[in-house]
Image (cartoon, rainbow, N blue to C red; front, top):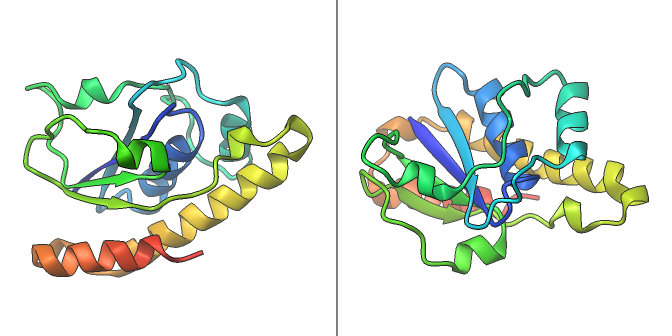
Length: 158
């Protein structure tokens, strides 16, 4: 199952969730992340935290969601927005008409540099809890309404 995580800048929250899914769900899901207006680089605190927690960050980069709208793009099953801006934007049409949901999290990159450590850890903890909750569910067998409801429920976990 392919999951696309969207945020406006694709430098922090979406990068964190992409890495969490690819680490915890590597036998069940492949996650990608992108932004509507990508920052062009991954936030250094994202890289620092993910590295400290043992995630592979070798392929981490800030990408445009346009990469995932073309004919050669992987087919997405689920699209998760993690920021309110991306959730409110008109997204491209994704091949396969994936299920969409919103798992909003405060933007840790908006914190002042002395608070980065705490802000990024908080965002990571929330996103990890949600990813673990989804991976506990046999979501591959759920019908669309049940999957949509489950994703909405998980998006409210803090």
